Amino acid sequence: MKKIDKLVLRSFLGPFALTLCIVVFIFLMRLISQYLNELVGKDIDLLNYVKLIVFFSLITIPIALPLAVLLSSLMTFGNLGEFFELTAIKSAGISTWRAMRSVMVMVIAITLFSFWYNNKVAPWANLKGYSLLYDIKTAKATLNIKEGIFYNDLPGHNIKVDKKFPAPNERSLKGLVVYRHNVNDYNAGNREVILADSGLMYTINDKSYLVFELFNGTQYSEAAQTANSFSSPNSGGQFTRSHFGHYKMVVSLESFGLKRTDENQFQYHEYMKDAKELRKVADSLKKEYRKSRDGLLPQSKQYFSYAFRAETMAKNTTPKFGKWVDSLLKKKAIVLPAEKEQVVATALSQAQNIRSYAESNKTYITEKGKAWYRYDLEMHHKYTQAVSCFIMFLLGAPLGAIIKKGGFGIPVLVSVLLFILSYVLTLQGDKWAKDGLVWVPVGAWFSNTILFFVGMYFADRALKDSRLFDKDIYIIWVERIKKKWKNRKSTANKVAVEA
Image 1 (cartoon, rainbow, N blue to C red):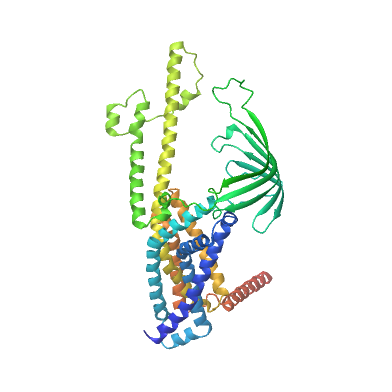
Image 2: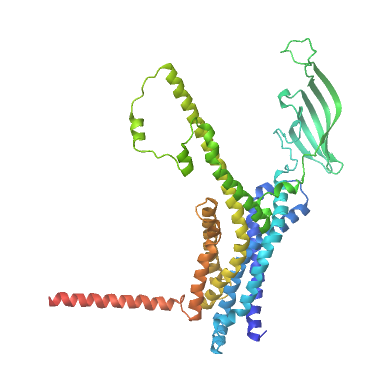
């Protein structure tokens, strides 16, 4: 490797590593802020939160790589141009493409790594991350009984406390009302009520059970009426009341905390599959879609009480209808005899059945087609996200050589604008592909194709040492237009005076 390659490559690797970490952090914060309300307040240990952050950091890397390549290449060649190093390289007879060669080889390696990462690591990280996120979201919040408000997150219990007094290892309570009911039968109502003057609340067995020690209270209970009871239906069961000085109530906290779901339940999603699996699922969905579409007409014949003519079936054509259909619709209704009214009712029922059959099949075929497009699109994205790293290099390196500004100023602004453009084009192409408006490969590669030609244009400008972003060029251009306008106006005035 020559010294010029080491110089350019060293200038690229530092900003690339820094910008990759910054971009991953930004995307991670955006993701956490999206689910922040569902993550806080849960009785979950720190290790699970660390795992969630690690998994989602791995998930954001494929998205962050293109932006990091774009920003670092802009900064690299912007710095080389700002400090006249690029000018010195050109004065030595070395072209701009030769100066970019080492970085281009590195970006090709990053592109290959990105495809391997998207195909192998990203599905595993998606499966682990989103399954853990689902379990955290569905976990109940930390036990928090507030004063004067009924708390009903404990299974089979509704509890209200008038006053709470904190204690070193337990919590003192004042004025308790406890309603107990059968968890499996909510229609039975609250058949047991406990009123207590005071009590203590604490946990035992490593927070597996919650204990209430109640003092100076009364327990009201009503037994459920059995089938052998001779009492009237409205009289209810046997009612009892008892007083107590000390009563201990133990409640299981099994429903609280994190419960891990079987990860196999999430493997059906397209984000959890590699390119080979996506292609296999897309092909099977494609066959089902075409089979359902082609079988629609033969299966619909059972709803008709007549058969097509032989020559019509041989030609595989449908009867042609003329303007006489509209003329029939405009005619007034005719009062028919009872026998004919029955025929009309039967025809109407058949028409409604045919319509219902057509609508249900249309919905089924449309959803089947969208599923096929979705899996096929995700398979193409395994390649497009990798290729976008090289596309971003074609945009960033020539732009940096043209702008000749390094640092985190103009390069960051230009990178954000280009990334937003890429994001919008990707969304638009995906929408067209998912709706079936364009062929899936066209929608998947729409953004990369547009940006490739834009990058080639900037590369051509960089090779020709274009001053595309120098304001002096545009000031001179505006002055020339003003001068031409004044000359044309003065010429018009002279012609008017002579006339």
